[in-house]
Image 1 (cartoon, rainbow, N blue to C red):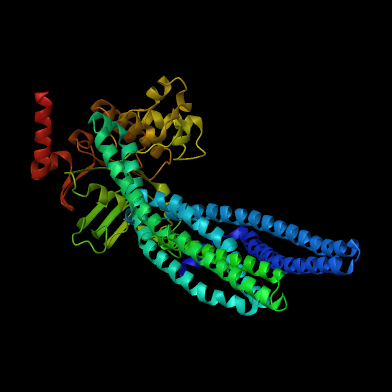
Image 2: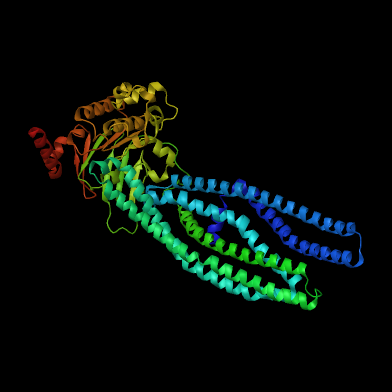
Length: 594
């Protein structure tokens, strides 16, 4: 817990001043509130004595009024001070807690941006969303309580106890018996409720996952008429969260009765024995002023304990949220820059030396085994293989999206682990299998490749990617707005825009991971021709399912079950490689049948 607290405290940063001033003003507010009943008891005593003097000795009324006015004025000043301190505490608390939450979300987001693919695989998308929203909100509320309520309640409890014993003497011993009863009751309630709160956060992840999948796959859901199924799935996840909260709330509902029982027991005790003591001693050992103050302090003591119980509930809930947040903040990227990184990639040469790779250390099977391969700068290389043969795994090792388990991958004659990450990735453009466009204009999306690119450069790469014609057909051309995820363009258009974006980086190595699967063979041929003629010095790696997409490559690699099954040109592989021959035969037969 201390470790988590120190880690989270780093996110306070520029809000340290407000985080310190809030508890300071709260402490002053509590002092004022605890002194008010003490002064009020003296005021009651003065009024009582002056009234007796007036009644028995016929003193002037002005004398009584002046004494009451003095104490009344003091009480008004103290009340105003208490109000001022409370308002200042509330203001600084709001600034500190909201600022802390803002910084915490920023730290989580920026931390996740530094993660390698291996780190990203560890946390689901829905879980990350829950951590940045629900969990941060819980921690924010807990922080708010820590710098205000968690200061106020203990101070109020301690000061009220001291003042109660100062004024009430033996009468205050009632608190010695009631407080342990209240503490045990509240502790039992918290102990029963906390496991439920801890469990519910994982169910929040499931709930968010259901929403994410449904929204992302809305077209699939509708095309298969699965709306009712998705509604039931979401309803089931929502029902589980609801049931857990109901269970927790039922347990916490006992908090108020236990509190009320102790509170009214104290009030009855003070009223009964206090009034008897006043009457029996004729106000000598215990007077009405002390009686009134003791009742007030009793309420303050018990209400502060009740607030403490709620703080413990909130802190325990927030503790689970804090653990989940700290898991992300403590996660170290498996891919980091070396101490003395190489800052220049000389050329597009690629070499795999005795490479073995698996996605997780505990995985039993290697995704890639015994990979030895040399690709010269400027070559066009095709990669063919069945689904799940680890074609994508192979190319993801080149820009260090993953690190090899054994062996090494070299680019430009240098181990990729020796490069500065930004330098390497700026020279290796990857058009991944899952193409993503972001909300914004086409121009804005393309400038992800080069934020300083001119309009002419953008048009040039779009012509290479066969995207210029359809972009110009839009009413707003390159200023056409792309909806989130690129839902207002077709799959083929999205792929061509992603290829153009990658080309805008002017990389030494261009990797296309099945990125022309949604375009027709004619457009595919035009794209390959443009690349061959326009960027001859760039190493081009094309992963494809269609033989026609790679048959004119300088070298074709056949991958099977994570191993290189064959390497050669189209003609060589037709003669020597059984897998390549089978794929070619099945595709050409299918084409003839069509």
